[in-house]
Image (cartoon, rainbow, N blue to C red; front, side, top):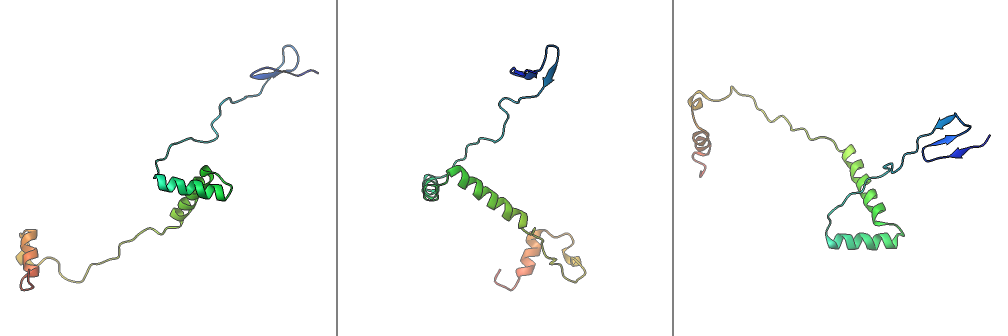
Length: 110
């Protein structure tokens, strides 16, 4: 049995075709542009040279490290800062914020 390869499939015998998909130009990575300072880029190039690595490898390592830190981060929760009381005093029920603030600082140099 003789196999003959064409661009898109393998032909075995006349009338028989095996369709094996071949993905031309399949994207295996993404190219992007990042804007960094000249000083930082120079330092990254120096480190890459010293470590016999590439700028791309160092950028990927930095991004992976940052993403790992984000996953470990505990979300911020605001503590309960309420206090016991009966709410707004009746004399301030129709007052503006300026009036309430002035009353709060009355006699305190405000």
